[in-house]
Length: 133
Ligand SMILES: [Zn+2]
Image (cartoon, rainbow, N blue to C red; front, side, top):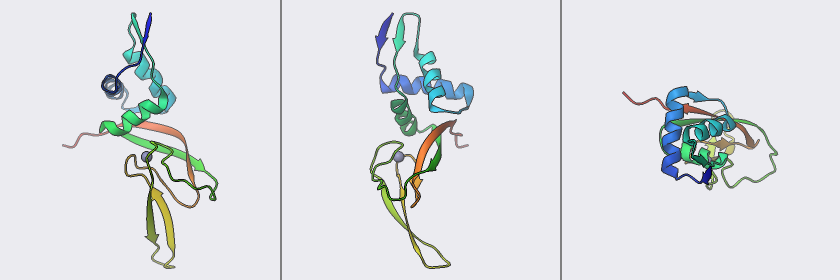
């Protein structure tokens, strides 16, 4: 048995097959397992790392990522997206009632956002995006 690192395209194709079959996969761990199963043959064994797979899913165009999170330290400064690693955008929101400004950070790439109470991702759910009619 030989071990291979698959290309992004190969992972993407396997990911699409898995999601077409299952529609929704409840965790990154489970998705990694399913994609590996899809890639592997009797002769070749492919290694896929969870965060690489997540990034390919985010950029694939056919995956809707659902981010489950817990509350993190509000004092901790967050500049990079904990989901995909790119620099977060600072967004100011004016609340209508008090006129108070709240600062939020959002990721233009994967849809992650956080307020003062930091959202720490704990679990990812992967959905197959519905095709536009
Ligand atoms: Zn992101």
